[in-house]
Image 1 (tube, rainbow, N blue to C red):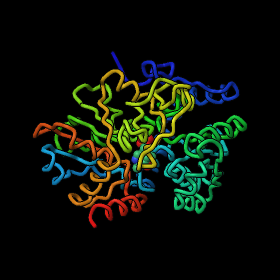
Image 2: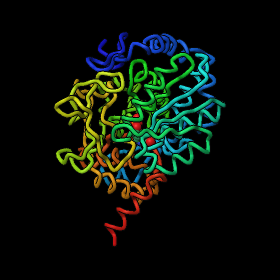
Image 3: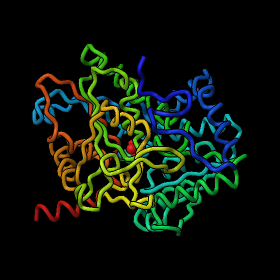
Length: 397
Ligand SMILES: *Cc1c(COP(=O)(O)O)cnc(C)c1O
């Protein structure tokens, strides 16, 4: 049967794989060998399920958004990842990876972070498990994301500001990989999205697949059928989207819509619409679509949402779009901001700016009146209040 899941060599169609320095070969092979055995073991499954329930607060609600449904003429449910501990879906993944790290006998955790959300989620589980935590973060981002830096420090992590390149996410990632090369034996690298060398994209997708597992159960209970007509999620690297679609990826009854960050417009030169602007290349150890110039140098992406301005995209999503299994829509800064205010006024939910990009697709989509739609609200908007206040003051004063 045709599948859009990863193949035995770590590829999704022509995307994926593991393009890594020689020195990491053994360590990545070890991870490739260990991850499925551990994730499928009874002891892991029990401990993971217990932490997701008692620590993360799962299952997250599947909420019928009545007023939003009326506005867009469909039956719309919101998957409420904004209610997870630490405020977004990222914790589902870090809890899983730290349990794997412990089972592999690793003692030191490293991570990269852009906006700081993955850094906080990693520092959180390191506090929980009493493990050393080092987070690489571009110096520009350290300055921009002051509160998250304070949170990581309060949680006991060491935050290392990276001063190479543009001093943003891709530079932090390069530095994390460099650290990993120096400490391949004792260190576990917790990657925060469905990116990086195989097995990371598949591993992160599996750890986030609790989202679609719950959607299945919750839809069955509420609607008497276990699949929606349409799923909608935003994509930065692609982890909340991968988790949302995981159990439906090969079910052609379900339409998949991905929202990427248009920034100031995809032709403006200030965008993070990687799927539409990217070309095939290699980034962070995987073959995928990359925003790059004619010399193959990575271009700095831009979005009002710090969680979406990544110059690559998960190989699973690159393949879904190439195979026309998924539709991708670019949502510009202003459209996302507008959508965030709309959700807030219609449903009393202030979403993260990333999630607002998923909501920003709604005016662009044609729905049938009875269409069953599930849209994942990947995180809450507390961290984005400055951007919301600025927009509000411009627009309403
Ligand atoms: C990090 C983040 C994203 C983007 O990451 P994905 O891996 O694409 O899910 C989306 N929403 C929120 C709230 C985030 O913190």
